[in-house]
Image (cartoon, rainbow, N blue to C red):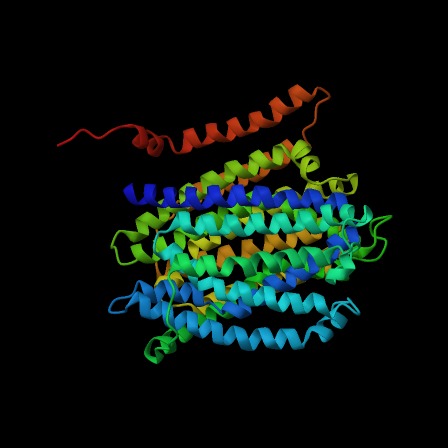
Length: 501
């Protein structure tokens, strides 16, 4: 139980900072939907999907490899840190230069003619992210959760400040004649440009602080370490590429697959903006998963040598499913006021009905992360590629065939089916190579009931606003009652203090 409490404590710190930071960052969606048109939001969605994809290439699985080898026997963690960071800096210089030089071609391919500068900024954002990856990982490995959380929060606050300045304040200053944007190479009519520029400035300014908190390093490459690390991380690179395809491909391809005039009054790019904005409403589930991952990944590796680790992993999975199922219901039944609060404009409400599907998709992604520990601690990372590739193929097929027919729901189902396939395959192979006593039947009951209650609450509407709110949220209590019935023995054990011997 002490291990679970430790993990819960670490997750709470990461989660609190992530939720606080993302809550601040989430306010940007209010700014974007209020000050930018839907076409600009569609552009923002597409470019950030590309950034998410290339981020995997720039780090090529070295974060997980760093955790694995830093906790290995007979290895100096500082040597692993120095070698990994040096390798990433060298590879980032090469990859970043390549993307920078390819900017005109990318602008043409992605239909942004004359805007190669967007992709030059993208190259710099990717480079800054890559050289921060291992220092952030070291903070997690060293249990410096507060330093990690503080750095992330500073980065987000900087990003929010620059967005406010460029998108809200600069046009007002320009219109009043107090400042001339063109004198600084800026344009008061920019939209997605300022989103990228704000990200670039915030990431660049945070580098010295993160390197200082993680500990500065001398450059050096230890060949005896890097060879095995590369063999371990290479399958994770392909897993990451397939995984980010699964996560972002729907947003990246949506506007190109959706027929023109599918939604009256909206172009395909504008509809992609609505689709991408509704993804943001599922952000709370993603935040929980991200916070859990920050804490759990180094925790899992440190516990892997304990003979009781399978039982511990099973307990962690069960607690994760319970918490995220409750969260999914709570968000879904309250979308009637959460949605309009954050997405300004009636056009965005047309996509609210896909949010429960997206929440379930993210929940399954979290389940997959729990399950994936088997191939990480057994060094069977080759399976990761095939599992995520299967998910990517399913995702693309669902988008290709269902988006032209079902629009927003087709895109949302691509996320759900992708992670469902990945979860099923990972569970099947994991139980063969590294059996873990998961409470599978009980977990499935919780997931199915939570999904059903989520949609019941979403579509349940009464004329009285007070009764509507009360009845919708009563569904959360029904689910809690189910937990009390199915897990009464475990819950009782939490509150019954053992008598001392």
